[in-house]
Amino acid sequence: MTVDKIKFGTDGWRAIIAQDFTVYNVGRVSQGLAAWLLKRGSDPTVVLGHDCRFGGELFCETVAKVLCNNGVKVLLAKGFVSTPMISFGVLELKAQQGVVITASHNPPSYNGYKLKGAHGGPSSPVDIAAVEALIPEEVMIPTEGLKHWEDKGLLEYVNLEDMYVEYLEKKFDFAALAKSPFKLGYDAMYGAGQNVVRRVLPNAVLLHCEDNPGFKGQAPEPLDRNLKELAATIRTTPELKIGLATDGDADRIGLYDEDGNFVDAHHIILLLIHYLYKYKGMSGKVVVAFSVTDRVKRMCEAYGLPIEVTPIGFKYISELMVHEDVLVGGEESGGIAVKGHIPERDGIFDGLEIYEFMTKTGKTLKELCQEVYDVVGTFFYDRNDLHIENDKKNAIIEKATKNEYKAFGKYTFNRIETIDGIKYHLDNGGWVMLRASGTEPLLRVYAEGNSKEETADILEDVKKTIL
Image (cartoon, rainbow, N blue to C red; front, side):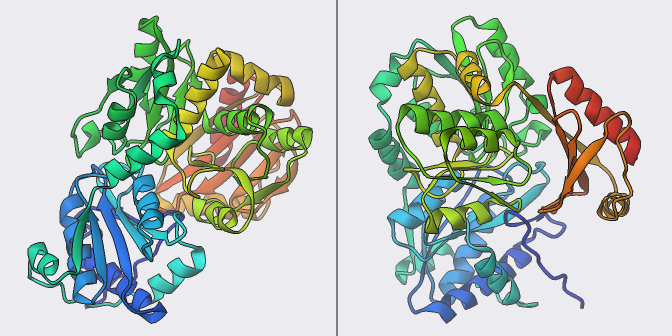
């Protein structure tokens, strides 16, 4: 029997439940992880948890059984948890590794396996590759239940939610936020952030904060097209002045201003740099993924901050945050980390920073975005996810790699970058980027223009050119 090789992508291993993401394959990955941990030292400890996705508890049990059977101690989270809660737990509990059963923002048919390092963020690319190389073709999954391993002292339950909430209460003045003139709406997208936000912001208007492992058929990705109900709620509820959304495992963020207009990750990264540097007097390097707007470079030039661009995948940003003084690290997809927190994306923490920014200044999100525009100029960004067969997707990327595209309709370009994907710098001052998804049969087309209409037109011309 031929066994498929399991490959980790930009953010963990993800696959369709019951097709490739099976109990057996989860056991194989866990055996590889155990072998890697035991090679590095004796008596390793792993913090383990799952989000709200279908099958999380079952797959978590499998991970725990395999790890415990290899003599690895497991600290198992009670109930569902967010990815940042696992990373925080690894750091706080001084564990050697974290494992989260989550497919993050992927469609409901997927589940996944994320690895978190002892530093409290994504495991490094080198460590992930080392684990991957040790995944066996066969594995023996113990039949004993979790009680057996608990009695042997190899399994212990931990309440990561309580630990994380206590931590947030030290970082933010929730009494002041409770009196904020700006009422907040929160859309959990049926994801793992729901309990924490309910606890720390009891006055928030909550959407989709209930158990629905299939996310009502919607991929829990905090993009404008997936958050129409939150946008409509803000527009029809005068007292709501900010909308916060997080993805399935609550490490990504999306925002809405007081008019119900979407505020994307590019703007959020700029807002956080602006707040931390101009208002809080903090400094450090800014690290962004290749798909982030070049306006970040403009702001860094204006503020005298160093900047570094990485390949796509937060593990590259996190690695820099561990070894360097990083003020903000962020991705276009809404994964952002800030100084003074763990080196991990955290949609709730980022949302609280922005909410605190508004509350302390008495300014709306729209007014704060205008402060950003005063520094970097106005811009508009959007992204098309083209669901196409892998053969077609690969053919488009091959053409782009060979520089066969000379223009996209009326939009010409003057420069190409290929750090991770193919980025075209347009003559109108905007840009276009093509990148194949590493986890799904889709091609992502990113675009930035000087207005919403222009950006939509760029995306349409790109689509006509490549399909």
